[in-house]
Image (cartoon, rainbow, N blue to C red; front, side):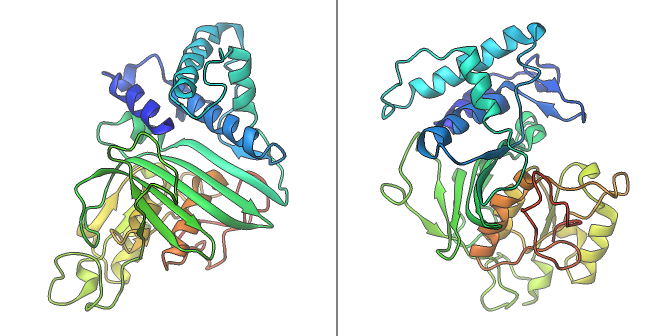
Length: 334
């Protein structure tokens, strides 16, 4: 339901770069009414189901609560009302949603300190991809218990399975993983709503193999999987060290011709599904000391790991999600 609301919003944007729905945050990154709306809807659902669980999420409603942003908050409220009204199973679906409620639901995701159990959420990971025609973005949610990512969910409405075993032309996939229980994908095509594990067709995920006889990447050249394995990195140059990433990929036999650039944690989905063999996000020379946010990685990490892959920082250390909103003990992601 959240996905459908996001898609409807995106389809209404005829000139994303100049659209009034876009707000520029202090760090110069964009945020849209869809970011706020998705966070409100998801935090509302988490509060109803897990009232004692903190949520560490990307957005907050501080600016929306100011007098000059009243119209924008009203717009977000209409977006949230539409998502709730589309939920036929919601006993309160006829309730009128107020701007104050929406702001409170958004701020339900403002926990910043580590706890034994919490959720981390990026309501629209890859906002620039969401705004960009044919760009990738993801709704990313994960559950952390005692420092371990136990559950990860990535909803990627623009993702295609190109390059994966049993190529599927469908656009839009849900990627789900539970620690110790594997990872799988579910088509979003034609599914406005469904219950995972009940009426959804779950397809197991498996990372690509370095064995040329079992690799899931199509069109093996000269029986050498290194020529067909791709590495994936961010579209935005400022999100990593692209020159160094290309050098490393080349050193392990992956050529620059096989690079795949996309926004959001859809990169993790590409690795988990076998569409790419390597994801590199090394510290940008422009921001060498920048610490990554946990909501940008947690869901993707468990999905890749449960699909048979491995995720570490550039020193081979496990990503540490116990230090609040950022990966304070890690540099880069491999």
